[in-house]
Length: 482
Image 1: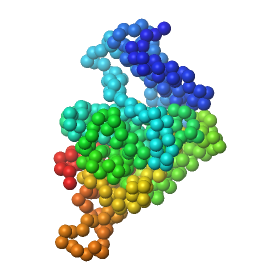
Image 2 (image 1 turned 120 degrees about the vertical axis):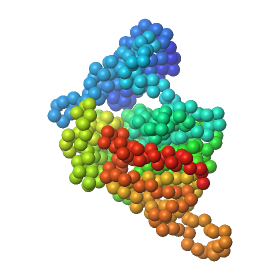
Image 3 (image 1 turned 90 degrees about the vertical axis):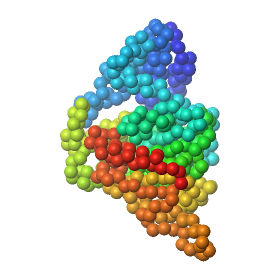
């Protein structure tokens, strides 16, 4: 009986409700999609005063937050109560009638979501030769793209993250790492992260084509060209962790399409010790009784597997000094982290919000990352890195247990040096000593005991990390392209 102001949203709800029995097995995914449709319908129709939209928004908020109310180890509830979902839904339903300057954070967040866009492809051919059907790449735009398209900064997401998790870096003003005063920041959700096309949307990995970071880099180019109509060079590609690897992949595939690359805690190829860590995460998930190996699916939510994976994640990437000095301790409105057990439990809780199928898809992208693994470079990593023409700042953290400064410098040692104009000796050595900068590359080490986590400074104790990264990125943006 509701009259939707946005027919596309109504269509979305119809498509969701007509999902097959396989999709309904993964009830949480269906619920999330219905919730998003309900709340989008409420927000879209609010201005028209359509009766009942507040109720639809309320239902959407309820469904969205209900899955988060999971029992914790000691029988308590997760920090975000069910009522928050109802309040958010009701506010969305009344958004058009009750807008005011004192709307709370939930409404501000809903307005932010208005920047979301979707780049859709009926078919997309992967590097493997497989074809993915009905691909949706969800991205968020901050700021305004200028007429020439020369002010665009592209940021691919990292493992376990979505566009929403990147917002703390982005805003208008010099206090932000990615300042939108003169720039437009485009945050692209990588395939498999649960927002863009992902295995969780069908509830199984059996039909998942396993796209790589190479495939995501191709989509990055197509998105900016076909959906945003940006034909020139991007001002910068910024990425953290697997996002940094995607940035480097973009830079070597399309050297004329980017002027600068900021690669935070990332390498051009996944290191052996990182691959062992990633394998341990996958094995912990698939050891859960819910894993059906024959059908490549979890028959139910793998609670024990997710907890084990989260605990492994808590102990990797950080330094011994981080734990010895108890740098994980903090106070916040939710009670903070008051002990080592709290820290581990907090990390586990974050893992428990993720879909296990999506985790495996993202682990595959990370595990197989190698910017030279394609027909263009044929596994010659030095050649692939040497093809990058963007001014590239590699920003590792020496205490990182996954991507060390030595890892980065060893890779850069493979970059061939061009012949000097007055040097006629064609047989001269075409490599360099580790640690030296080339015309394209500079290594800037993050001074921190936080290891891999130093590159994602969203926690209250990481203000110095955030400022360090911000200042280096601003300096990079001030430099002219080589």
